Image (cartoon, rainbow, N blue to C red; front, side, top):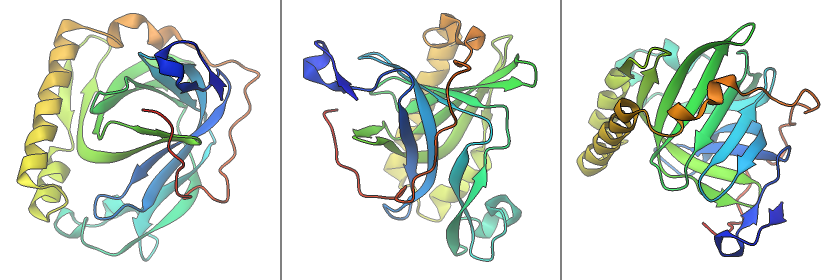
Amino acid sequence: MTDTAGGAGRARWAPGDHILWRYRGNADDRIHICRPVTVVRDTDELLAVWMAPGTQCVRPVLADGKSVHEEPLATRYTAPRTTTTSRWWGTGVLKLARPDDPWSVWLFWEPGWRFKNWYVNLEEPRTRWTGGVDSEDHFLDISVHPDRAWNWLDEDEFEQARRVGLLSAEQAGRVREAGRAAVGLITAWGAPFRDGWENWRPDPRWAVPRLPDDWDRTPVHTAP
């Protein structure tokens, strides 16, 4: 990590640095998603990271080892859970996050670098710490297609999370408001959608980051 003159002396990660992109559980503060990523850009305006194919990640599963999405929706968020590790099976994901936005924007490609779509992940604004960023997922998402058409995703999961108390009525209202703000940004085709990130490619010299043994360690926070 390096220090820059701007941003009130805020510590910066350099391109190529390895950090962790993590999510807390909604019922408690324990980390249940952890993805080692490579920093692409870190400025006052934007944190961009690359999750490479084959990255070893931490993800939640049911206590019996089954996928969370194998559980019926009615009990999906109340059935006992644990975590497991597995390799990221996709072609890689570019994640873009502005400091105070209650969402991050992810880019997906098909094999051969054919651009597939943007994905707006509604989430708590990320907290920076020395080893990466932490957030909390808010269930509701938006898919944005290359022709700029968009649609809501996971509305059923969002409503179920609200019903079982993982989101309060007030918090659910804020998430909906954030979603509407994101839709406004999509409709206006503002940053980062207009910035050509779909043409970005990772440095072929970058190694796949390693998942550390202490991936769930308590963070040492840096300046926001």
